[in-house]
Image (cartoon, rainbow, N blue to C red; front, side, top):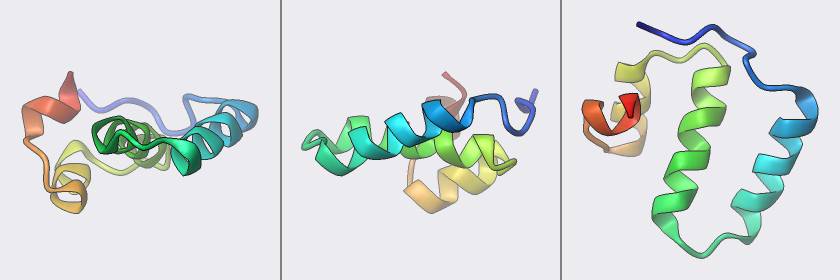
Length: 60
């Protein structure tokens, strides 16, 4: 089941982008990017290909 697009607010997006810029842990960066891409209506499959991650990892 794919989440709806725009499930986070603009303010939440800005906070995540700022956190991504300052984060050193690349795994956390991938998590942040996953949330932002899913919010832009990317599919799980597209996100897994873009971030080179496993499909189950994105779904969790």
